[in-house]
Image 1 (cartoon, rainbow, N blue to C red):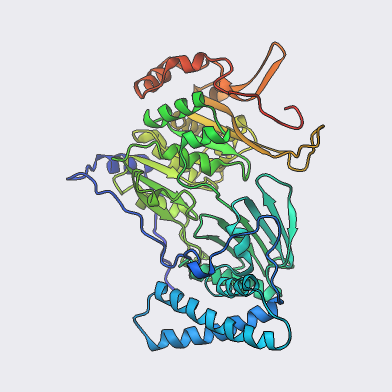
Image 2 (cartoon, helix red, strand yellow):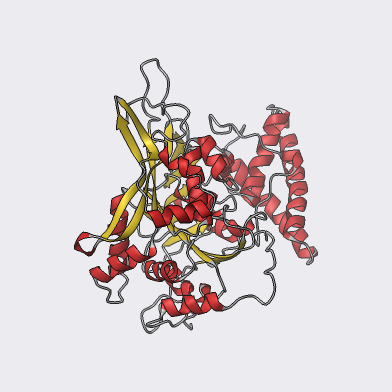
Length: 521
């Protein structure tokens, strides 16, 4: 099989980005419209609409072996109907499937009642829902995906654990009868999302997948004792900075600052640990980009979905591609397209900004060059334990890129490219109980905004905290509040982009009330 990856040795990223910026469209760029996925699961038809139970698994009147048998019967009839009508679309297939499922379940329910066990209308509807989920949605996973309170679903064989946004983690019923059924379910999800090139097989034992609701699925099998799956939910899409204020992630002062930083074309990296809300904040900030700008996004799996926002900028969205498990004569994986492979093509798209969903590997080098040589305004997310360590993390990734970069050059590139680092913190108190018996919850908030001010001592980037926690006169605020530290040139740029300078002189920001935690921070 031919290796389809582009050849890109020793690319001159600064020159390439500058050349791309010089190419102005001959006429105003068209506004891109939202394009649905190739096969996107739709909401349930009205007759079998679901009202999810957020407190406990849905109780079926029969075991899942009965659901599997009904699924088999309905699947055969749906296949016959699709074979008889070659023009049937996926939506037609779903509608036809709904009718067939109702018929199959109704006939089964009649026989079941003859045995002396009548079903209530609610029980029969639950069976129809379960069969529909098995055929057209995510099977036993679907109730969890329908629950807006679920944050993470962690599966290890028949052991299932669910993390919630506002209550403690709890165990869940098995998602599949056997490990083989679990693997089949994951591969079914990949095909259903139009990502059939991604599969969990002995040749490709690791798989990463985006689901239609924006969730990200990571799965491993054959290299682990049992299949291991993690689904990270993105419960928010289409929200902006004002929504972040309502949720307590930022206050109105910081919202105004970030809005001006985006419009003032500052390069920003959002950092934090896993699951703290980096992507949600980046998405909210990106919605502040003027709608007449042309933006490129680069992600291993689509999570930002800026290209589906009809009110956002014009977006050229690139998504990485996993390999088919085979290797060429050079030892490289066949068919794989990494973010660093896609970056050169992305930079040829006459873009004003570049947004990298998550920097994990050697794509860090072209990203920093794009930030350094372009007009500014590019953004990315990065895993780091605190804002200061994010500089070291970026430098480490540069050194690991395998292009012979020195530490001094990595630090210089970072200092020249990055304007602000925004750190998001998560405090999980769902397992704690307060003195009055109140349950704890999860708190997500920005705690630091750090400005990179150039090369400092030892050749490392120098920085100062523009926003950070404050403790004074017996009062402590763990969330980001202004500290008055910002370079004059930068504040003038932000003022031209709409920042009210008085925002930076509010020692306690605009937080209306103290953070209500079980344990003081």
